[in-house]
Image (cartoon, rainbow, N blue to C red; front, side, top):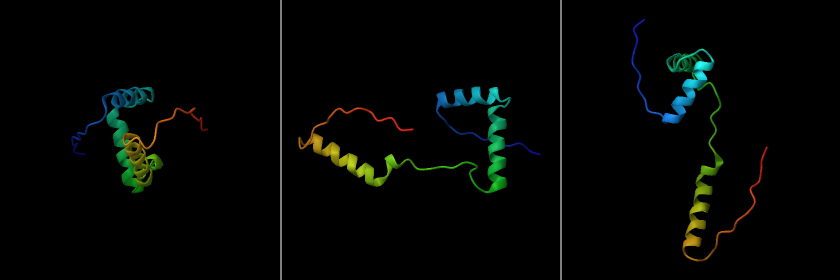
Length: 87
């Protein structure tokens, strides 16, 4: 079987952590990505769930932009609050 070179960019820290994780499983990055590609091809889908973070929804971004505009215009102030922990 002929081999093909695949190049792409990723965050340096993510790559380093991925290499460590793969090594702990006895894999290389190449073998892990090859396994991923084989699974995608076999199942004709991404083999894990991908969900959009609702924080980045258009409605929330518009709300945040309006809040920033209100603070910038002096119509509102920022208030400190306690962080909520969610399980």
